[in-house]
Length: 499
Ligand code: ADP
Image: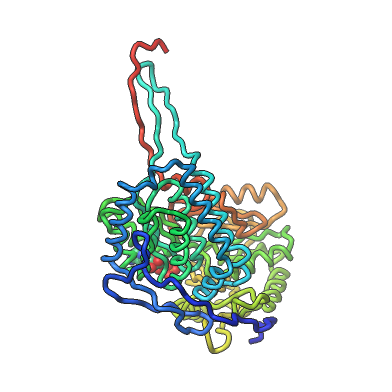
């Protein structure tokens, strides 16, 4: 490939995959049906392991275990401090297994090994510790209501939670959901994506070693329409927290409504705009635009897939951007020089390539990329389309791949209107030196997170989630803790008080 620069390094020795079964009530077990499914290495399509395929029956067993652990077990009854200590131990165990976890994550999801090892996996320990520290600081309010009445609010765990997780950030999404739910005192069932089950099962093993009681954290691997659907329609699961596509989010909400009206939290798709103004530093703006669409091979819901550039710098910006895109190194995720690994599986790979063909047919100008790389594995060239219009499919749909739609605009008002012209509202980026422009645009964009002169600037203390059809409910921050809690008001009369 001419997207060279790689030194061809790869993983020398395949690790032994130790955990392939469902984790229910503290034990690794086969599925009731005995069925398994294959999880695949996206570098070459080879089978990594056969994983137990859970369905409705297994979800039911997990729900019973989680229900019993909630209704009768110690977890929700421990003090927040004691739960926090166990979570801290869980975090330590992750740190002791970083190398192996990072390897599994790269093999299963095609994510960069060095990034997993340095940031992603250690970051999970940090997320656990963040919420562990919050577990003993959960408190309600005291309400002085009237001379005759006073009340307090008690924050209680919502109960048994179902977490349905996507494949693009298997570890980050697991802990974004599991950590606050554990801190709140909930018990849970996690369904990892069928493409990427390996790290979730490893985390189940570490949870047990850390001392999380049996039944508190269950992992049911399997497919969406079977295991996933069984979670959203289960009568004994009290809440569902989901990250994934808008279409599936709708199914989950429907199933939740039709069963026990369980609340749902949905972090869904996006088509996030990055708006670059004439006064921007072109070097920085082009770096942000590229990273915004190529990080994690574009498999990220907050990707800056629509880039709007003000006309004064458009030509110069495009020149820089294309130059940098051509130097971007795509290849084996174990090679430290590589910046983009393979797409997660054949389905996603084919979907992205078909969007690219569609973009060409619709009249977009391909500035660079557009093809697969090599003839093995699911590698795709960094791809940039210019001369696109808002009604084209490649501008409207979430592609979830390394494909950017580049557009030109004139005024601030036009930039805002066009950025908001999407059914989604997950994230947006603004590049300008003008504070007033940055503030005005931030207030005008309907999206859950705005990055000014940065992109993907992540911190676990910062809530993430959508406006519009990007969903509702927030992951991360104390916002996420509160979604696993419910409020009880306890009211008492006061007799003969003059106050
Ligand atoms: P993507 O389109 O990015 O693959 P999905 O939204 O399809 O993402 O998948 C995210 C998660 O939702 C996965 O764990 C998947 O198995 C699950 N899922 C898919 N379909 C359903 C469904 N009908 N009900 C519940 N979960 C589902």
